[in-house]
Image (tube, rainbow, N blue to C red):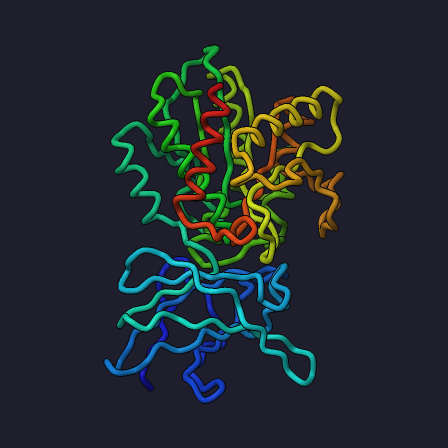
Length: 375
């Protein structure tokens, strides 16, 4: 065997991994592990070359049509990096159709490396969070606001502690309610970098970077994760412990600022290439609906045609495993029960049209959102 597979690091995900032949060429065959949920999407693994002359294999993802929004794989561009260098997009997938109707998809991996790391989308974990803190040079601080159900620190990033009774504008943000939705983390990274640059001119910004921090560490995708989706657990005191901790933290935040917006950062189905768009609040008062629409229009103008979907403002009418009247999302809880302006932003795993997104693009989306919030 000329390559060995490594999934023994945080955020890794691949099951049934095997090195085989495909059309006479070496192929790494994997499936995405659903990790305690009904949906699979996320994968991430490392390949180490044992034979210096061995060519890089194809990546073959089995059952690509089982991935949430995976289709036949032809819209998907996973990422790869060599020797821990920069992440690069792979070409679009090549569907592999079987006689019995099953669909796999394959991608050619780069050759010039003894170590190749592959992921569904650009990863964001503790290493990237540490880099954000280092780059912002003390202008952001990290606090533990509780513990996860798996016993990990439940963390919040902020540009200040605030003062009770202050009228400083305030922003409260969540990312990674679904652990594999890494575009949300990169958008948050860009937004917080801009918030740090603005200093005292910025709103008081508190952000939970990894709502499902256990899922992030375990390499879970996390959509509809058992026993209840984090983004359907916002009921009374919360149906997940992390949600309960976030609710208490939001109460602390709102006592220390003049709340302006609650923002929830997500990524949509796998194949979507619509850049960014928002889901406005469903239900609640007309005033709440009008407020979320006004914020959405401001964001659309800030992102422009480069990043904003042509259908930027949407309502979440897609089917859900959880009844929305008894399993509210973060934004519906914030709007209807806390009477706060709230929006959910979806940013593609892939890009916008023929343009594939990298870190710089996701960060620019976040930066533009920060400037729109400041204005």
